[in-house]
Length: 232
Image 1 (cartoon, rainbow, N blue to C red):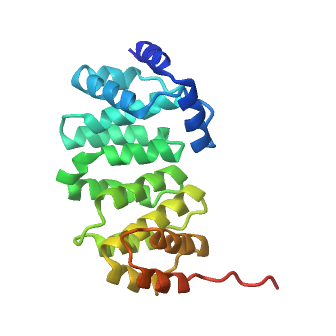
Image 2: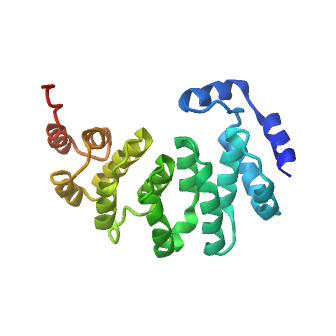
């Protein structure tokens, strides 16, 4: 099945889209150039058929092959334990922000299994691996910036200490969404946190870029930017 899927993906490849995608994701060199709607259509078809055989045989030579596996997992209609088992098998294949973020937003089963998935995510948020942490953080920002979880989400974001660029950017993004949804709680956090300067300043920048934040608030947020200390 893996070889047949690879052939279908090659037929769907678009040279112009390949160049566009490759430019967006600088750390990968294995892009065919298949548009996302085509991948989703194929993923839905696989998820209705023998998806277990597909996931067992799926190859990961191309970016799109990995993206497709993640999409199939998101469309599965089975029990949460099996889905999370498939998620755990997939996460080590994530090696770029695009696959990570697309995979996370597809895991809509989280909405009806909040506590179970919350527990499942905790080891990823404590990981030392850049994309395992990003997976955990993006899952938080996609599903857990809610009243019941906001305090714990902010604590978890503050506890992440990793030098990976894609971790820092995800943390900043998540904090900006926290501010948009819960400005008072997040402002209290922003005034007392242990974030590194890059993540903190990037979070402020993302808040000020949001159309859902008023101008007066943006002015206050800009004034909080940390200045770089002069070299001694």
